[in-house]
Image 1: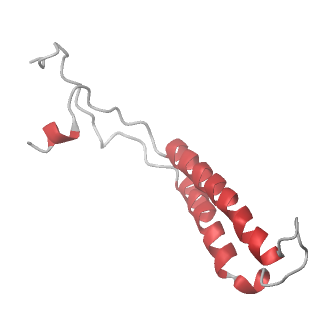
Image 2 (image 1 turned 120 degrees about the horizontal axis):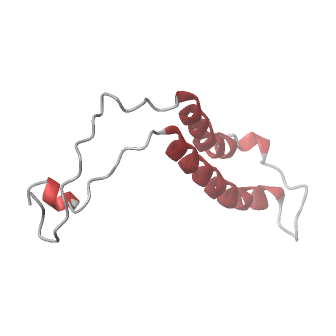
Length: 102
């Protein structure tokens, strides 16, 4: 039975035959997410004034540098997770509200 737009319903996905996720890639993504947390929680490694960069003490510019590094680590982890998970086709024509019965 087609929907209002004339689309045929999607073929059912057999989740039993979908290959499992690549655990090593997911582990690498987890390490990338933990890296900024550990680097910034270990205050003793950057609690100093020297070397200065543009008049700013190391303590300040090190944390500001991690704003960009954290974004890069998060994006890299996201891409790794996308590659690690097998492709599962999405259902066409059904929104989240339709599936929830609303």
